[in-house]
Amino acid sequence: MFGGDFGDQIGRYAILTDPKSNKFEVLVDKVNGAFFLTKGWKAIRDFYGIDLGA
Image 1 (cartoon, rainbow, N blue to C red):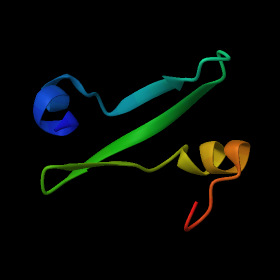
Image 2 (image 1 turned 135 degrees about the horizontal axis):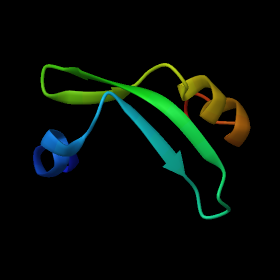
Image 3 (image 1 turned 180 degrees about the vertical axis):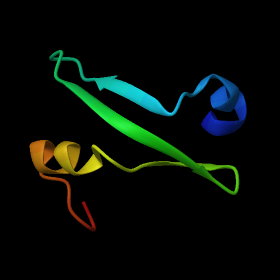
């Protein structure tokens, strides 16, 4: 999947940009081959109103 295809190209930090050019810098952690967005993820959650079950 994504990590398997692009894992070697993913840096420690990423800048995510949506179609309206909103930008979010996030810390990317790799644990047991899986990628997680950590520092900076809360700003994305708050901006888009993402919650559990969303």
